[in-house]
Amino acid sequence: MTSPGLFISIEGGEGAGKSTVMAALSEALAAAGREVVLTREPGGTPEGEAIRSLLLDPGNQLLPETELLLMFASRAQLVRQLIAPALARGAAVVADRFTDASFAYQGGGRGLDMGRIAELERWAAGLKPDLTFLLDVGVAEGLARARSRGGEPDRIERERGDFFERVRATYLARAAAEPGRFRIIDASQPVEDVRRAVLAALSAWLGARA
Ligand code: Z5A
Image 1 (cartoon, protein in one colour):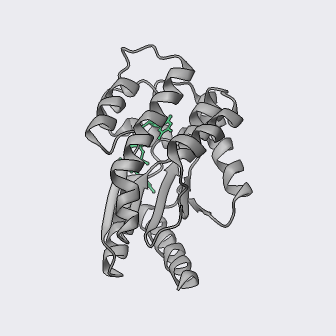
Image 2 (image 1 turned 135 degrees about the vertical axis):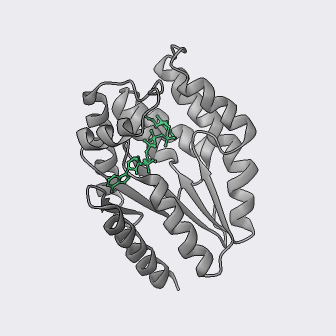
């Protein structure tokens, strides 16, 4: 699917700092004259947000297959209702996670077949981001940050450290396999340095497209 818009996703493990990066990208893209649409996964539509509640409720015992299919159910709705129309009118869509998260969490973390996930990517998502920022931080540091925010951990946050190590390794492998799309950002740096690195990479990418 080609479009006049820009589709940018932000990925990373727990506490990687996606929220800060979303805000920085939104400001920079608006300053460059783009309409900016911010969204998140799972969620981003009323139906997707209902699916998100099902997915993250610690009271639910979901099978890995159910979890994967719910991620793609939310994504199918989001792409058709929000992302594709926004891209068609030339907007910049910035997504807090997209299909790479399904490869990392359900493929790497849960051990589901990557080929099946790729099939779902083609059928249910039907598009890939143009640019993906992978905010990479050590698992222990990311979990400590996420826990320092307080509140009850959700169903996926309750997983063990080795689950998140597999998630991180899968993200890094995907980034290595697609260097044209991914920018790996060292998210163990102070917030301001992360922000600066992301904005520099965005500016270089936009410059190369112009
Ligand atoms: N999931 C999945 O399994 N499969 C899929 O296909 C998709 C998702 C799409 C919900 O995602 C869950 O769904 C998620 C993956 C799974 N599972 N988990 N667990 P989410 O994105 O909504 O939830 P999250 O990843 O748990 O978000 P998060 O922990 O809030 O991460 P974040 O947004 O990157 O963190 P943050 O809020 O920006 O920062 C966290 C704290 O760290 C905060 O207090 C900051 O002030 C602090 N922080 C941030 N950056 C720094 C730096 N550089 N230094 C020091 N402190 C920092």
